[in-house]
Length: 211
Image (cartoon, rainbow, N blue to C red; front, side):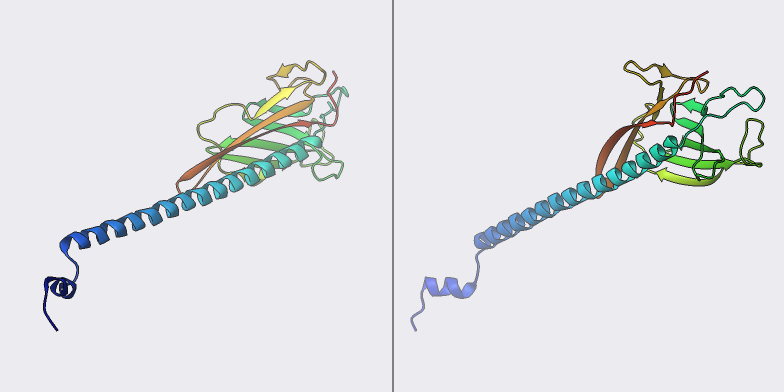
């Protein structure tokens, strides 16, 4: 078999130039796979974070609304006058009387913020049914409802209003509060992606308080 340059080239294998081309092509393929994988991870993380945030805020809103629907005014034991349904009516803390057990005895329900968590507590009266002169047990049954409150948001969670076409906004528990506007915002991170979800709702107590 005659020996020539072409035979020598094929037997010598790849040249440095050809090897560089192969390495560049391999780098392009690896970079493409990495980018696709990164985009997929981000998309998955965003979907997961949004799902967690939406489920958490929806559950919290539903729980608060259910309790507020059971809200009832406390009546003064001596005069028979209404003392209102709310003990505390603050932007980020809400305490009210409600028959949450449907046992014809009022409990105190408390919602408050600590850190990034919305907590729910209840307290029952020592004697039942509860009256204005009742002694109350310490708050118990502490439950964390929402654990991913958006740290960048410091607005009101509870806004207290009267009924009617032009409702008044109240800042005191000693008021004719009939409805409470709720606003919750969560921020959940997953795979380096943060999803923020906001949910608003309105809850009505059983009846508007009249004095």
